[in-house]
Length: 121
Image (cartoon, rainbow, N blue to C red; front, side, top):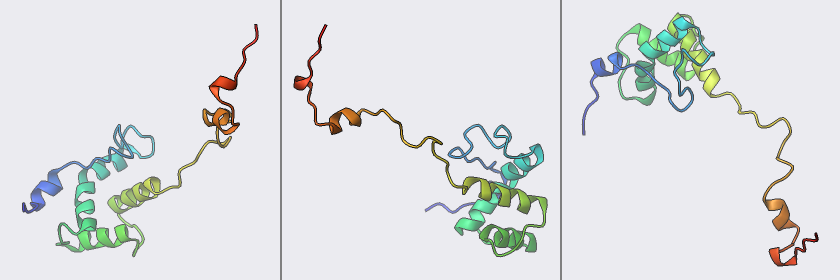
């Protein structure tokens, strides 16, 4: 099994294509600086959260504590990560009108078959 190199993780830009397919900067959720911080430090924070690497400094231990929700964010990186977590974990809103009024199932639920239909001219 391949071991993950710490230098590779720190140099790799972080992307979340599931929640931000066009990137953090183009989403409108983050400022330019926050998008840069997420891109630069997100891979390391994600690796710390997954247990792929161990924290080596007090700053990384602080990042891990903020990511776990054990501590309030203080540095710009911690604040950007906290904002990112709030954004991706927000509840999804549905249609303000509920379900569609007309569906394909409405005809089938009425009990009518195609043979029962009579079209008059």
